[in-house]
Length: 284
Image (cartoon, rainbow, N blue to C red; front, side, top):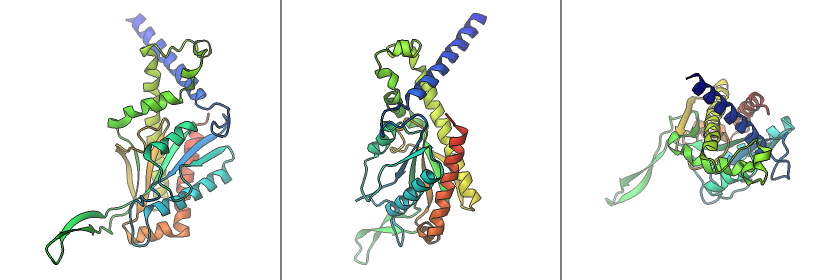
């Protein structure tokens, strides 16, 4: 029994060693696409865009609000934290396919991926018009307000495997056995490291989401909590990833807040503080 316990401890130690080595390999010092080791890479994803406007309010559409907030967050991060590198998945009114959004994060070896959205409680319904024909209509729910941040649900978390392996550059190197103390990509038992990394990404995603909700609450915003969903935009991110809903565009009050300079500044500050706290707690 003592021998078995020692073997288990040794296996765990080796796995943790692999994690450290692979995380180091995530940040090769190559070019602007592969940022230097001392940078903390944040990929910000303004939701929707182009012919996909997202949720519609009375004065605006989601794609425009989240792009404004994303650009301002990028500027605040870069102005305030020199070692942070910020990449937007879109900087203009274009649609970017779901898989390409996380591809940008994976190819740039991002430390975190943040997708920014505006929520809506309105829903489409079918009603009869004066002629008795069924037509589309919108049922308004202006009283629903608040913020929430989503992480990837367990039922889709296995989709991260490919992204994690793609990011593990050691698998592509000729001298991986010499450089990484015997890691063997042909040995199935070696891949315990990816399971541990995936669990760590999930834990860190929840931590980042919780920090965001905490900051929203400090600004007296409604806190609808951290939730799990099977979101396509997060499913293939090989790093901690969240989708944050900054407010309900279906609420006239929250729409006006999200459109205002003061409101956007407060939202950006909330997200900035959460990222800063997360970065400090996860120093390389």
